[in-house]
Length: 232
Image 1 (cartoon, one colour):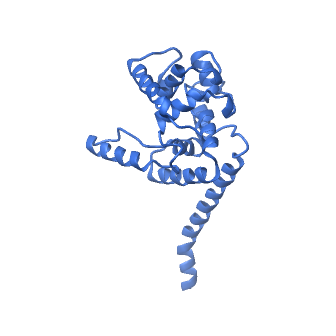
Image 2 (tube, helix red, strand yellow):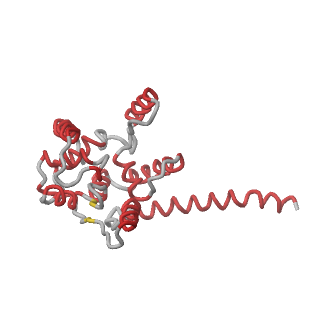
Image 3 (tube, rainbow, N blue to C red):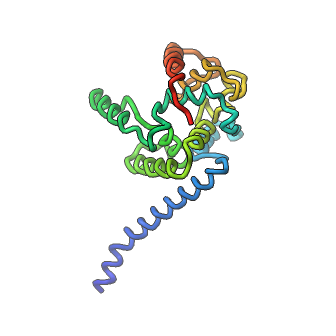
C-alpha cells in the first residue's frame, strides 16, 4: 500500500518531467532540420495570423524567403547595430547588456529596457507565445542555447531576418523592403536599412511611408553605428 501511495504521489511529477524532456527533444529536432531547410512559418507568425483573421477571415501574411546572399549587407549591419552589437562574439546572451538593463529597470521602477539578443528573439519567434512569464523566459534561454549550439551565426541571422515582423502581417526582409520602399532586400540602401532596423521594436506602429521624429533620430543613430557592426 505504501509503495502504491508513493507511486501515486510521484507519478504526476514524473509525467510532467517526461513531457518536458520530450518537448526539448522536439525543439532540438526542429532546429536541426532548419540547419539546412527553411522554416515555412513560426509560432509568432501563426499567432499574428490568427489575430488578423479575427477581423478578416481572408487575411494573409506577406512573407517571402530570400537566402542570406540576397539580403543587403546594409540591413545585416543595421539590424546587428540596432538589436545586438555583440552578436558575433556572444553565445546567445549579452551578460553586460542584461546587467545594464536590470540596473536601469530598478532605477525606473518598471521594465523600460530589455536585453534580448538576436538569438533570444529568434527563439521566442520560432517557438513561443508572447506571454510574459518566468517559465517562458527560461524556455527561451534553453532554446537560445540550442540555436547557438546547432546553427552557425550566419544561419541564425539568416533565419532571423526572414521571419521577424516589419509591419502588420509583413514578415521578413524581402516583404519589408518591397512593402516600405518598393525594392528588393538585396537593393536596400544604408538609409533604408537603418529605418527598417529602427522599426523592429514596434513594427506595426509604422505604416508605409510614415515618418516620425523618433524614427528619424533612431535611424540616424543606427546609420552612424553600422560601419562598426560585425556580421557573420
